[in-house]
Structure formats: C-alpha cells, structure tokens
Length: 250
Image (cartoon, rainbow, N blue to C red):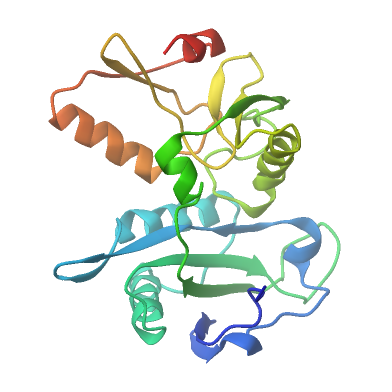
C-alpha cells in the first residue's frame, strides 16, 4: 500500500510549494517529540459549479484560535492560509478532497520550553473518502463506550484542535477496534457523554435532537452546521449534558 509520504503532488510548506515527497522535517523537530501543534481537517466537495471547500473561513478561524490558545504565532494572514488551501486543491487536480493545514514547532531547540522556536505551517490536500468508511455510513456503526475519559478543561485546552489532544482519541479508538467495535464514545470526568473519538455526537429521542454541551468537546464546525440546518428545517435541537443511558434509549 502506498504510504502518505510517497505520492505525486505538491504541499504548501512555509509559503512555498514543494514536491510531495520532499516535504520533510528533521527527526528532532520539537512537535514530533512533545506534540505541541495545531491543525484542521477540511473537506472540499465537487459541485455543479466546481469544487467547493466546506466552510473554509470557519476552519481557518478555528486554526488561528487554536494557535492563539497554544501561544503559537502562525506568521501568515488568514487570507494567505485560505488562498493556499484553495490552491492546494487546484494544484493537485482534485475535485473532492481532504485538506490538512497544520502548524508545528521546528528543530531549533529541545526540552519543554517553546519560546524561540519557529512555527512552521503546511497545507496538504488529497482524496479521502468517508472518515468512518462507506459501508459504515450505509449500514451503521457499532460503538463502544470507552474506558478512557475525555479531557478535563483543567488538564488541556479542549477548545484547541491540538495535535497532542488526539492521543486520548487514538487510545479510545484502538480499544474499541480491538474489542470488535467501529468507534468509541467518550464520557467526560463526570460520566456524561462528551463526543466520539473524532466527531461530535447527536441523538434523537421522541422527535427531539440532542447534542452534548461543549465543556469537554471540540466545537465542531460540522456540529454547528447540523444544529443550524436542523433548526432551519423546524426541528427542536437541545444542547445539554447527556447520560449514556439516554444514548442507549435513543
């Protein structure tokens, strides 16, 4: 199977377009060791009017907010990052795509201090189907309530889409897959439903749509879209703390 490092295409790396296979960093890159970085996952879809990037502005705003929370200076304007994402789609000749902007610390130093380190920014785009798999989208998922707890707000920055935060997600997902399930449902420190390993969750009960509050969960842009569209269509949407037995009964 072809790895992500061996593909044709171009990647935006610190303001320059470089060959996909040459977009490399040193093994002593700070973020590789300590996980301090921020990123986005953005989708582009083919439409009758050409390729459209889904809520580009909102994704870029969240990237910059994440960087601000983590005290990282991106060094580029939002307009520059938006334009680079558009060009990543066109330069790689993609109709539908997944885009990955990411900011990370370089190899100027080692240890926990991050002051004085350069912030690098990359943007890659490639074809990627349904995150949970086409079969699962058609037939449904088997979800395991995870033994791992979602982050507490005083442990890490839950409103930042930060690289290191996803260790928690990976452990929960690996546990679920090992036990024969497709996805994990994570609870917060008080035992209320937080989110899935890589997505927000909604439940429907008696015709009402419920979704957990965002205390321990990332403020998902897709989540916001679903809430807005559902309310526009006349559905009642309630954001509240949800117990896992409510999930079992939906």
